[in-house]
Length: 288
Image (cartoon, rainbow, N blue to C red):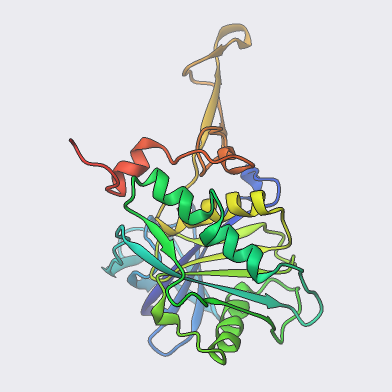
């Protein structure tokens, strides 16, 4: 089969921030409005959310199997630019039909917009003023709503759509925002959070209740995925006799291993800047 549509790429971060918890999910919204899940042999494509793509694979129900992420199996028709701007942001609080979470509007506003070292404050600092997250109307935190879904099985695409629909009753318009943050109770997915890789709007989801400090860290981490960033990883290498060395043929990767980066374990109870390479790729500084 061949289908064209809008690609959503989501990255899941588990509660222990281990390599086993780190997963990518690929969804294709077709021209007919179907939501297809894409499954690749090996690694998925290095393509950001919001891209228009054409895929060729074998379909079974709403799942599509593709041999690889390159060649004729996935062709990018249009790639959504990430940009660096003032980012109008909405936050939606939603409970499941059989599970709720206690988190106040003031807590969410502080975590994202107003606290010292809020997500907005942190990104203004590390981007040298290029990026800020704003609440455009001053009243862009919606909910809480109860959506007609259980916390299990894992169905985050349907949960987001239901939350959007509920928020629309209070004036939420999805196209008004460059970023949308969803707060859900803990779920059967088993994730602490999910973030889209790029996209317009960039999507971030959180599951459960956290301290304000840890919630700020997780928010900043998932928004990093919205900027197109992956994880800040590390290698631990050993040489003769098991002695640790800088680089060798015997290395063990750690998905979140960089302790000095918000996209690694530097996202846990600390505010570490993204690495210089990613800042440069995002055009947050120039050659001068």
